Length: 360
View 1 (cartoon, rainbow, N blue to C red):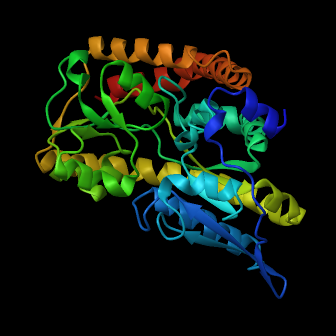
View 2: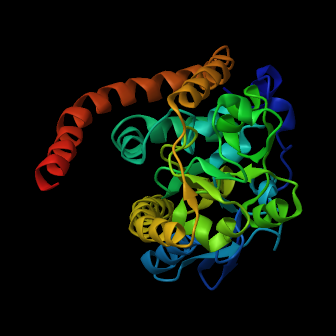
View 3: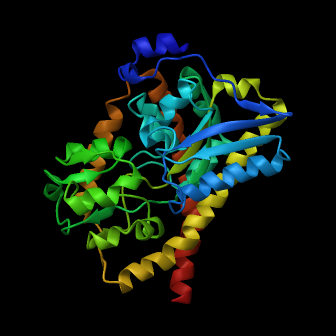
């Protein structure tokens, strides 16, 4: 499917950036420098670590012949303008969460997270051992992008709230920050959903522009200071059971790289993905303990609320099934989840249950 035909027939294609003349990557004495715009403020815990890991990987693996010049959000373009900057040729790559681009096409959400979707290990199985990467590239080609997952936050928390959530009705009128299809599901429960960049969340909560937010997990949330402006935290959420981050290279730029440099980008992204996953898991437990000691009130949503999340999520996902590529990717994801969970629940799941019982 070519981009022009796709954008003409897609219900959400109208917001896609038009292609412009591409500025060539900087090349000096045989070295190539690629400009990478990101959706993250410089130094933001966890997500900026993925930016640095990917960038350092590329430099080291290429022996300095391929360099990534990473720009934080706002340094070249705004956080949520990164995708358009790459498709328009203003930058060579982006680093971000692909569900930020659901306004371009809803299927981008599958390469970050969808509500009631894949856990981090399930994403890895689908992406690396099945057809996830090929589908990522198929979608990216429509927009002139070559994407690879390059980070993983693991399961994300259900969010921070000024008041405890006791029923689904508590979401009515709630000003809440949640991107992607999870945000669309929350809107069906009556929430006033906003998608603002991570670097703006604290200020929005401080001024009352938001009543609550999800960000990532205890480590990143603590570093962002969310415990200072909200008292109630829900560690388990429905919207991002595992959340991948991605790099996306302008397709023309990628195709003009040498095969060796193309392979370096792919492998640097894969390493950044697994390293980032380990980093989040290693830091979230200690951070949660600190939040509890600091007075944050920890809650779990009731089953009635979970049921409301589930019904709203299904309605959102079903609403896009008339789109061919969305349906194709969703079918692939759900088949993979079913096959993977059938084994993991009987092996890892049972082992962890018995380990907890035996060891107390």
